[in-house]
Image 1 (tube, rainbow, N blue to C red):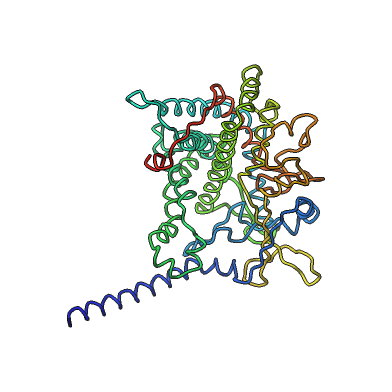
Image 2: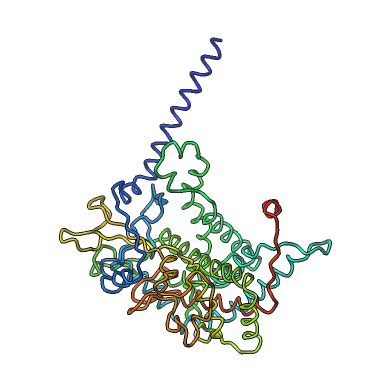
Length: 463
């Protein structure tokens, strides 16, 4: 009995020690998060399209700031602070990063010639992947998880825009690309509730494996992306001209060293490049995959729409740019984006001044607390005041003479009826890239009819 009591005492002391260590480590990792997200932060949801238009365009200076810490856990804890286009405050740094992306990578004169062969290869690989997965070794038709094949195809395009040729991705074998793809997909689809872990000490102790996974995110990203960044740096030194990747532009860009545009300028650190690369790969892959997946689901449920779309694609000719997209395909994609925006809600921070007017928030020093504005993009796209039968999938509404004839994926300055992407002044950024990728994939996939097969949930889980 005495020995058992001693063991219990040791176990209790060990538990207290581990709890204290977890709290200290958690305080370090979540400390900046608590300052950026104080308990008194007010959240306002914007569901009205007219109100959203006034905030986006009439008061753009006040509502252009992304949240200072969009992720509940500070992944930079213990390291130099890094930022991205979606987390930098609206100012000189944001403009420098945004200008580099739009002018150096997303400009049509640079992008369109590069995308065409990449999209053809990705579409061909997608169809081949789906066909090879349809039949098992015994000749039995199998159930295919379309998302996996889509993710592989879209990530391949995004990775080459980001890093360049196969050498920068670890050689022609594809090992480096696969490692990046799996790490990215695992992070975005891990199912970890980072918000709970950031708020609760008990949750960090009970879910210590999840906490350790998040805490090691930055290190894993650096290990994955560092070889490609080093290869890009060597490539830029050895040759001039040619097609420049996103990483090539990041190696050359100079950003303000301080808060003012007149401050001296500096090059980006490698850890900052890693953060921007992670953002580029995630945004460029997840949005396209979500759009294609939802659209395919809608086409399977609407055979008459699918037949009409197939006839248009078989009978017509198409170009490589989203501006040359066949009209009914464009209508189908826009209707899918209206009902299922890849970014269902958009966050902006502002400070309400003494005169009750919104102002850009100051640097995140904890005071005053910004107000979090959440634009409910999915609800705005389904507003019954803007659309007839807003819950129905009716692509014809975007054709000539329809109620959405003049509506596009980027919010309009006079009227907003849908806002499926994370808008940023003064343009839509990579929206054209997303639509072009969706266009290219559909032209190949729709060569054969899509058929639904009902599969019991337990069979899908077993796979």
